[in-house]
Length: 239
Image (cartoon, rainbow, N blue to C red; front, side):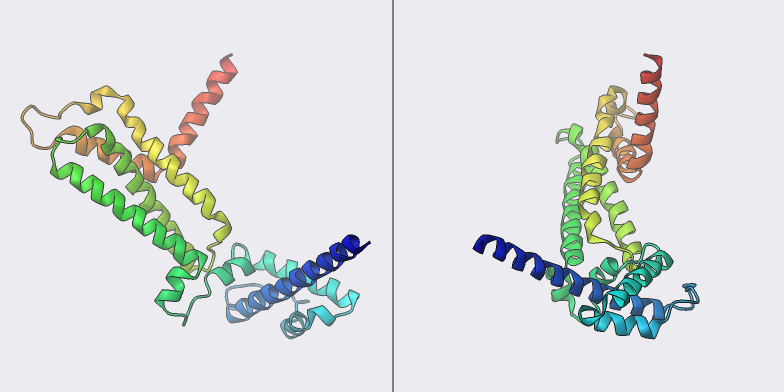
């Protein structure tokens, strides 16, 4: 009986916490909508004042008002598109200072990690080029592909942060893209002809051309794997 009672109390506490988060998220979303009402077309039945009042007192609302509140919340999310309460909270770092933004937010830590990885690829790629082939050129495409993928991720992240659309839930998928980009660009080593020097006696070997191709493949990794999927589909149909 005691265990069952504790489980019920725990479930009720979790429910209250979820309701508190729902109300807090709704409040932030409503504030964003009010600030950008010139860009967002709201339904006529939406009452911003009533909605914010419901959000601030959600836990004490009657069942009917809670239902109305949730319905209007869902209506708001349809109007705002990719800007959700979660993305607003993740990108709400104004006035907190650089240290807080970089080390105490999921977005800041992700950008810090991505910046370090980018500079690491830049360092190894530059070192490989300056040594002019004295190192193993087979690793150069992997460095270049990694740099290309990092450039893409930084550009996309910057755009999403500017539009308040960055969702930390997608960070794992972006890290997977980094791995796929490195493999896609590094695949140029499977073509031996690209390993040859462009001209006999030339100081610039195909390492640079190979690196450029790997950079492009890392940046446009979606196109690379779309081609592979297309080829794989045709082979499967023939079988």
